[in-house]
Amino acid sequence: MTTTEGINRRAFVKGTGAGVAVVAAPLILPSRIWAAGAAAPSNKFNIALVGCGGRGHGILEEAMRLGVNVIALCDVEARRIADVRKLMSERLPESRTMMEQARAYGDYRELIAKEPALDGVLIAIGPWWHAPMSAAFIKAGKHVYCEKPLTRLVSEARALGKLAQESKVATQMGTQGVASETCRRAIEVVQAGLLGKIREVHAWNVVHQKRPESRNRPDGEDPVPSGFNWDMWVGPSPLRPYKRGVYGPGCMTSAMWFDFGAGLIGDFGTHTWQLPIRALKLGYPTQVEHNVPEPVKETYASNAKIRYEFPARGDMSAVTGWYYDTINRPPREVMEPLEKSFGKFDGVGGLLVGENGLLSYGGWSSGAYLKLKGDQKFRGISDHPAAKAIAKTEPRAPRQNHMLEWLEAAQNGTKPYQRFEAATHAMEITLTALISLRMQRAIEWDGANMKVPGAPEADKFIQTDWRKKWLA
Image 1 (cartoon, rainbow, N blue to C red):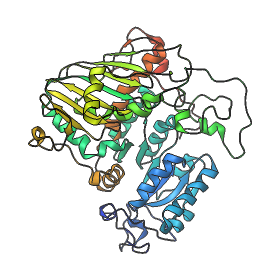
Image 2: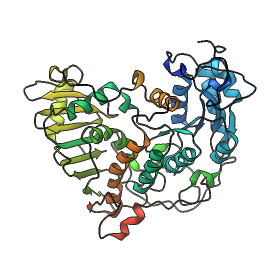
Image 3: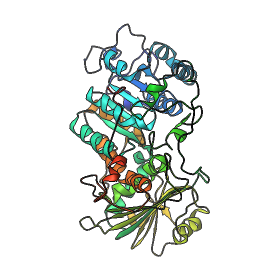
Image 4: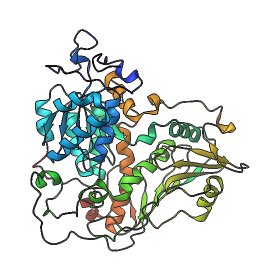
C-alpha cells in the first residue's frame, strides 16, 4: 500500500502489516465520524503514544506497521519525543510526514483535552502511572493498550477492572504471548481434562542471577536535569528528592521500588502466570507465602520464592502454585524432564503438573509442549496425537498478533482476549505476593474483600493512596 492510498477503517487491520499509511491532511476528524472516500481522514484510526522510551518505540512501530494514524506523542521529557520521531522516520521512511505532524505533549491531561479526534492510546510509561492513566483515557472514551504490569497494587487492579468492564472501549494489557496459538491451544487442552487433575503449577524467572538486597532510598538530592519535570514523573506516587540513577532510567530500575512498580513478580510473573490462571480458571489464592530473604525496605527483595494456595473450583482440584526468581529454582523433579527433552532449562517459563502428564510453556505463556505418561519427551501442543481431537473453544488472535487483536476489537466494538477485566484479575492474583513480602510473613488472603484477615496493618500495602496533583 502506498502512502497516498489511505487505509479504510475496516480494511487497515486486514492487510499484510507491511505498509504504513501517511496522509498529510489539513484536518483530522474522529474516526467515528464517517467521511466519503477510502482516503478520507475520518477513516483513520487515530492514536497517541504516552511514554516515548524503549518499550514505547516497540509498540508504536508495531501499531504503525498495522496502519494506524499517529496524531500525538506524549512524554515528560521533550528529548524522548524527538527521539521517537527520528527513530520511526528512520525505520519507516514513509511515515516521516506523519511523525513530523504528530503533536507533542508533556501532560497527558492536555492531550486528552486537546485531541478530540483521538481514538486510542498506547501507554508505555512507568508502571506506577499505568492504572491512573489508563483510567483517565477510559473515562474519556478512548481505547487503551497498556504495557504490563497493568497495576502495582491489588486495589488498583480491582478498580481498573471494574471501570473497564463498565465501559464500551477496547482495552488490552501488553502480554503478547497470550495471543499465540500455543497459549490458547494449551488452555483448551487443559480444560478438556487431558492432563487429569492438575495440583501443581511452577513458574520461574531465573535469568537475573544477582540482585541487590532490599534497601531504602539514599540521602541527599541531585539537581533535576533541565527540561525534566521530576514532580510529574513521580506523578501519583509519594514525592521524594531526585537522585541521579536511583529511580531510573529504565523500567527494570524504577519497577524495583514499591512506590513505582511491582518488582520482578510484576515484570515477569505477569507473563508466566497468564496461561495457568486462564487454563485452570484460578480464583483468588487463600494463602500466600514469600521466602523473605532479608529485611524488606523500599525495594523488591534480592530473590523470591513464592507459594500460592488456590481452592478447588467446580471439578478442578485445589492447586499449589510456585513462582521462583534469581537464585531460586524449581525442584529437581520439575527441571529434569525439561532438560532431558530440550537439552537445557530455559531461564523463563512454567510447568503444569497433572495426574496424566506435564505441560510446559515459555516465559511469555507461549510455546507450549505436552509430555503425557509413557512419552519419552515433550511434544508440541499442536502436534501431540492425544490432543488432536480436542475442540477449539478459545477465540484466536488475528495472525497471532496482540496489537492487531486490540485494533480489530476497537473498530468492531468488541472486547479483546486480554482485556483489562481479565488482565486485572491476573494482576490481583500475582500481586498478593508483594503483600506477603512487605509484611515479611505468610498471609491468609480474603480476595473478595481485599483483606488480610485480622491484620489491618496490611491495608497500606493493598489500598491506593495516590497523590492527586497530577491525576486527570
